[in-house]
Image (cartoon, rainbow, N blue to C red; front, side, top):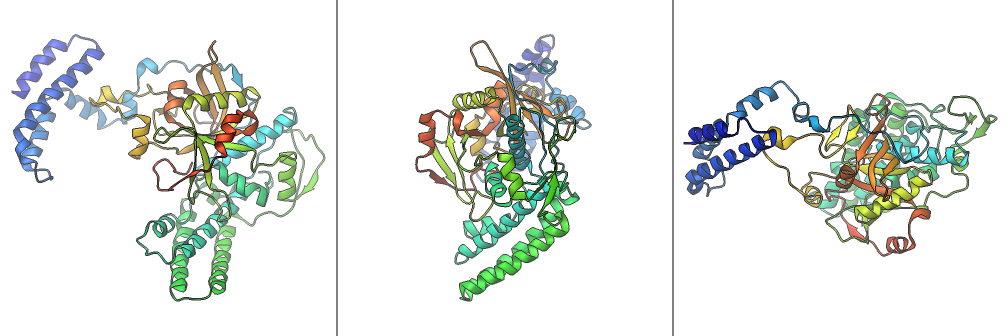
Amino acid sequence: MFIKLSSQFHLLFMNMSRTSFILYRFIVCALVVTVAMKSVAQKTAGGGISAEQFASMRQMMSAQPANRAITNALASNAIDALAKNRAAAGEVDQNFSVETPKQSITDQQSSGRCWMFSGMNVLRGDFSRRHADTLTVEFSQDYLFFFDQLEKANLMLQGVIDCAHEPMEAERPRFFFRSPIGDGGTFCGLVDLAPKYGLVPKAVCPETFSAENTAKMRQLISRKLREFGLELRRMVAGKQKSAAIQQRKMEQLVEVYRLLTLTLGEPVQEFTYAFRDKNGKVRTPAKRYTPQTFYEEIMGGRQLQGSFIMVMNDPRREYHKTYEVEWDRHAYDGTNWVYLNLPMEEIEQLAIAQLKDGRKLYSSYDVGKQLDRKRGYADTENFDYAALLGTTFPMTKAERISTFDSGSTHAMTLTAVDLDTDGQPLRWKVENSWGTDSGQKGYVIMTARWFREYMFRLVVDKQYVPERLLKEYEQKPVLVMPEDPLFQMDE
């Protein structure tokens, strides 16, 4: 019955358009599923997959002739290569009505430090802007990454001490032991680390192999931290004095420091540096700096802490409320990630206001969805998975977040927007940290519809934020848990 029915529909639709053919596939599939499921409906009470159900699945698959061709194609081709929407594969429009000055593209290599690259790109853009774009600088990610890892190690060990009276199976001990240390993060990490440890030019402290390839270093230090954490828990259980526990923790951190020095290099304490222009020509006399005095010169008297707000689009939660993510910070005595939840329309207007003043922004996205990496183009219509696979993916942004299907995964520096005659965004452009060979010579262009679906975080200088939103940001935040599907680290 299934094969006969399918053949009749195939003859009817074989000469129709692609859209009609997709409709045909859905009709056939629906009819086949309805009939087949009725035949096994009485045999599913146990919850497992019965032999009858498996036979029904095979029958449903063979009843659709197009499945064979698709199976053969997918056997030797990537899904994205076959799902690429030819109608959306034209030339990427690179015209932007509002664009900040370009700067050199960075490359995080095989590491999860996008949050640091994006944050530093904002700082160096602000520095160049204050000097009328005559001076440029690139910061050492290796230098600040050293202290990021050291601070995260201390955060883990002290966190283990704080919850040592809870069983290992409890949520918080599991949180610390599951991921003792990582290279992902948020803009808050830069805010906590740069004022404390300063900044260093990349020319003074270049990248090391382990900075660019963090997996093995992270794995080994995580293993050591788990060992150390268990020891600290035993000390607490043995009712040892707090001073003794803290002394042992310090000895453990010395070992972590040693491992970081071996893999990332000893942090520089003083250096001589002269600023250059975009062509590499020296523009200032060489001067002696410490990382802290260099940071102060870069900031030009401005304070990073308290100068911005972080906004986020989380349609699961009430808008115009402030939320704080517990334990979501880079240092034990650092700042938890606090954000004001806003609709996308308001987030867009904040971004536009800062871009119009020539200033870049830290922003983060779910780059794993509908991004054509080769073209550097993000659009919801890039790949037509529905037509290829004969199914739909109808979840909303809120539903995708709730089910762990989507969340913020990668930070990039927002640099440009193209506006229509009514001032509404048509497309956006970000400076990525995947090197110049990626995308549009290191940039990614995003359509407005993709931006609304897959953009999550934005860091905005307070001077571009309306007073009413600043007041909302100052309200007592609602505490949320770090295990929430949305609060992943940007990598």
